[in-house]
Length: 110
Image (cartoon, rainbow, N blue to C red; front, top):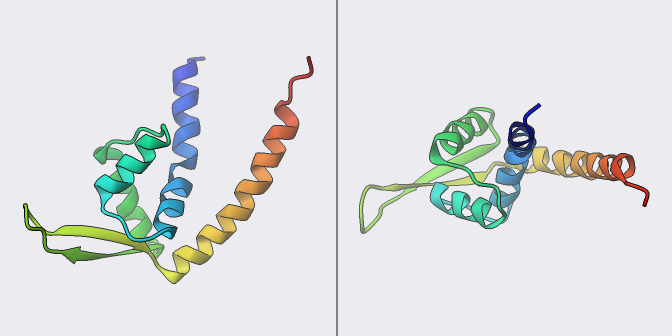
């Protein structure tokens, strides 16, 4: 068993939740999402992020708008839809339960 592979799988499992949580704070451009995830030590590349954003949009959880840019092509800014906000609330509750369960089962007694 490879530890790096296990860590990567754990990160992938929470990536969607983290992206939705970031977008709950306001609309973001994909490079801003990548920067915030990087600041949180969740390294994500565009090749991972864009398909995930597309899937979340197709699921009705996100929407986007185009904004003209002075220094290049128009930019696509993503935000949560009302359905996405409701979905995130459910994920928040699930995360709380899961986090507590993991803490209870992984405590190491000295």
